[in-house]
Image (cartoon, rainbow, N blue to C red; front, side, top):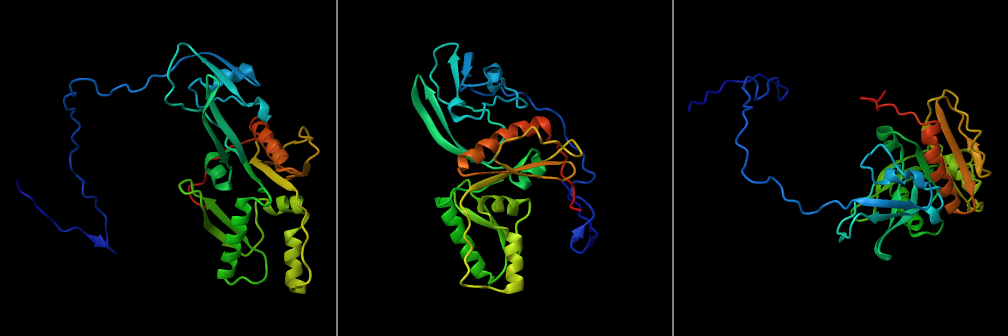
Length: 306
């Protein structure tokens, strides 16, 4: 074997040629290995019959092996169940669940076999702007529970972050992400401004405090240590999506908890407020399904930012 080398033109440390340029590919197939190429370790259990707490005519979509379909309950926790009857007796060792339509909510999942709980857990999913930008659907955000561990932890992290950055007066908007590995919060970004994406409007609906107005007062009047804001402790949330219509009509959404309707071309959005967080979650849960049919438009993400 003879190896021949030749100089390659390099500009600023980069070559304009690829190492495999001119090489002929080898696409011949080798012999097929003898014997089976895989071993069956599990077999699917066929479902003979299914019942559901609501929308039973759609329950087949929960196990039809089609990622474009889904079964959804009527939004009431008591009706969010499905019962499957197997075609023959079987020992269940693995369950694959078909879950679609992620949104900001927490809800328990329980799996029972012959009336015995074999799995129980709580799942929490969100629809942040980045996920919506790349996957489509509706953006959802809502306030978290007052006095919860998450709220106390986030307030503490945010307080230490602002102190470390030397921020003494003004408005800040920080974002944190929660790791799926250790369940801890990690700092993502911070800006010396009020939050966008209608977050300030959601907080005003829940607390009665307009962050833009308070920021302006700080800049004009300075800090008054004797004046403390007294926010009310209600809950609020928003659902927002691109719309197929230029000016979408949201008048069919008439729940009394709606406090603001987004007025923007090709956008549909609602802000809701309630005393209990569960009611806000219930409404956003319902609107997420209805928005998909009534408004949601999906555009591919831009290859580069404008």
